[in-house]
Length: 213
Image (cartoon, rainbow, N blue to C red; front, side, top):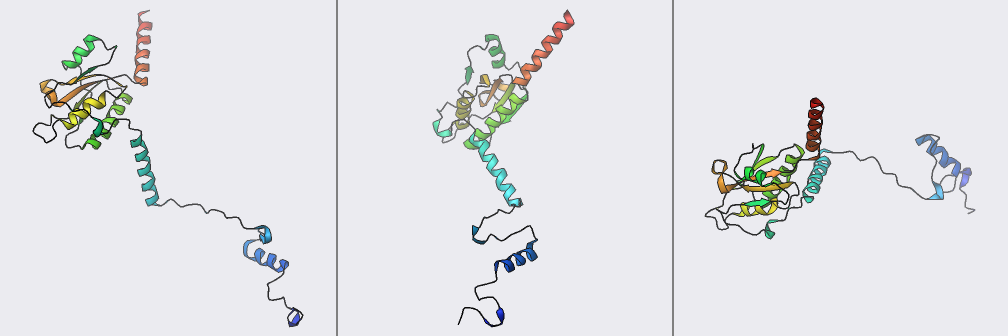
């Protein structure tokens, strides 16, 4: 045998390079050439976004936001008594302002009720609530946490709120509420003005000065 089949046909190893190119041209068009001995490069096909993928992406985004929650978990919380009066005043807060907060004289602009929340649910809810308050320019808010009397672990949520509120730079002061707002089972919260609210106040002051001049 001389390595060639009868009739002048191609050897069994396959067609010539010219025939191979013709076949690629027939299949894919003239602009596509076989790689030959150059090796193969993989090209990723576009990934179609299925509903399941979108749900998982949204869940991952929620988890990322939750991870930015800096409030301590419940295991680090020091307990308070069910009827204990909660109070906190950041340095620089005027005595008259704090007194008005303590006496419930400020208009309550937003409320959060933590009844029937687990500790972790309350932690997330309070973090979102305070952030929303500052963004919307809320200055005085009421957080209802209950007293937790008669429980095996009394005043759990109350203890957590007392601890967590101190961790917010946005919180200027807080104090247990007056009886008609829930007494020691709720807390008044004084929130620092956000950037937008401070800007609006400055604009109003400038406008008032121009009117007087």
